[in-house]
Length: 102
Image (cartoon, rainbow, N blue to C red; front, side, top):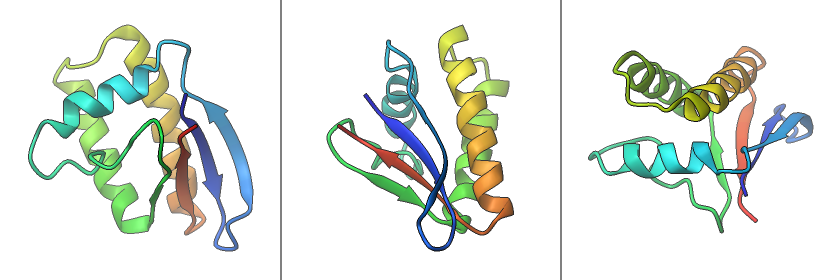
C-alpha cells in the first residue's frame, strides 16, 4: 500500500495518509501511466517516488484532467482529491510530495 507524505524543504513529514484498501490511487496511476509522458509513471507499490514543485504542477494538471474526463471511479476520485490537496499544500510551502511504497 502507498503512503503519501507532504514534506517541507528539510524533508520533515508534515502530513501523511495511506492509499485506500483497494489501492485506488495506485490503480489510477497505472492507467494514467499507459499514456506517454505521464508524471505518475514512476509511482510503484514497491518503490518510493518524490515529486518536486515542478512535478507537482504536472501532477495537479494530470489529476484534474482525469477527473474532468470522467476517467476515475468514485474511490479513485476520493483519494485523488486527497492527493491533490497534499500536492497543493506541498507546492504552497515549496516542499515535496513523497509517495512511499511498502
